[in-house]
Length: 154
Image 1 (tube, rainbow, N blue to C red):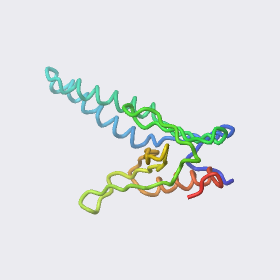
Image 2 (cartoon, helix red, strand yellow; image 1 turned 30 degrees about the vertical axis):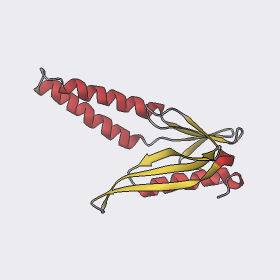
Image 3 (cartoon, rainbow, N blue to C red; image 1 turned 120 degrees about the vertical axis):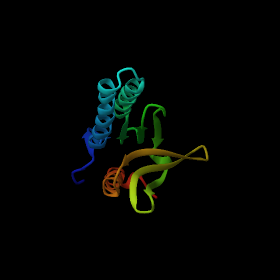
Image 4 (cartoon, helix red, strand yellow; image 1 turned 135 degrees about the vertical axis):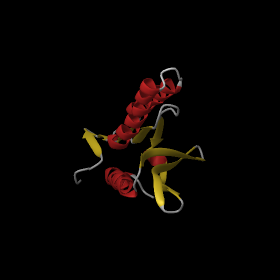
């Protein structure tokens, strides 16, 4: 197995390394808006809303994870604060989809990697990763397929 670019291996567990650059940019923008509110308009509630959003963004980035456990033959995923963790048995995995959202048909504003799986005959989807560009998502997908190897048959 080649060296994985997006996953950190611990025994037979592989954890997706997070992309902190976008999170840092987004959180710093909201923090600057909050500081601007404290300095320029101290009597407004704007500053508290921006500070609250900043804290929620930081917490959301901290609790998100994707772990592929080859001992238990499962993928554990959590994206954000609201949705709870999901456990996907590798035997139930059907495939992956890359969703790309474009603005005005030109500018890509979001790319998501989604896992499709079935449990008790019902089809489900779970988000694995989000980035701004397609290349990092494709790299994550290539690493996942490298990790799963013969366990995952499309």
